[in-house]
Image 1 (cartoon, one colour):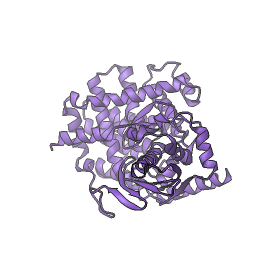
Image 2 (image 1 turned 90 degrees about the vertical axis):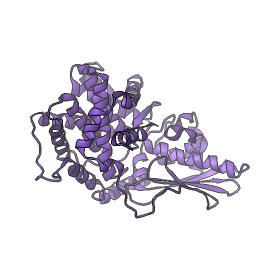
Image 3 (image 1 turned 90 degrees about the horizontal axis):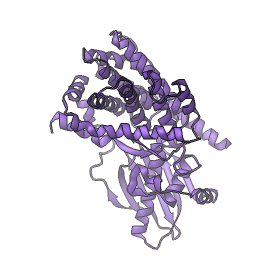
Image 4 (image 1 turned 60 degrees about the horizontal axis):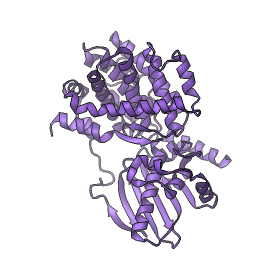
Length: 436
């Protein structure tokens, strides 16, 4: 395939709707798929209990995360609701079919029929969900690599399905996005026919609707404050405050479990929100063309993907602020001027790398709003400096000699750099869980 076709496909394949925070949805998906398979393999077996083993990234991200259509939080309730009524055909929107099942979920958990264990400390994705019927028969669904990638299904410990394309353990394969330089990504963004990337508008529309749900709900506490800071207007003449409102509101709606999906990027709704809505704010305030917005969004998402492929899907590093924030900052630079774009974008990447790289991820929770706001503030600052071609030079800190090297180094801070941080964050969560 030609470069243009490959990059367009990467974007199309990466963007997916997700209801609520992605990790509870992935847990519920794995469990509900196991329920479905148990019914196929043993029609008379009634699902009775579930055991889920999660790697640290999934465990941490869902730990105190609100669940759509539920008043409850966290891993156990995601698993219980997956057992009771999630629809696996809806993938990361599987919890959209769960209504008024909290009491049943509470009963299952109080009876000890829902077990969630922490597995390996890892920046990758791993969910091992076993559903057992009253007759003792069971199905295990194993998810690895991405939130919905089923690598293996076992019935009574015998493999009944396996992904033959699954990479062998220890194999290293260059990510497709890393075959390209920033110059090539920029060339693609500037030359791809606008109609070929028009699908990106769905991300703006979906994430904006998620933001609007925060305005209509009594649950959010940050969103009303951000609205007041923006003069009581959704779209004011202040781009940065408008971007903070849209981003903060959409993230708050997501982490509080409001019933509207986000368009995820790199498997994360918050990444998708931060990669898109700041640019949507600029589009609304400046009245840019739809085409300009689409091209800036394509660059934002590709830069986000570039960093995330180095940092790992789930780590102790806040990819929402760092990877998606850097992507959106590059998109902002794209919208600001057609002159010397490549130099401006290089400056933005170095400036972002020198600022919030190292911000921790302590799960999908209400604190994500604060991290999103920090990302918006930093992307404007990084871009404003880059307008004057002010860049934190490559001799300093983790900055590399090229933008590609800088992004690789940003990813290295997460994996392997923050593995001990991840371990300590999870240890704190486990201690809190015991106290509760």
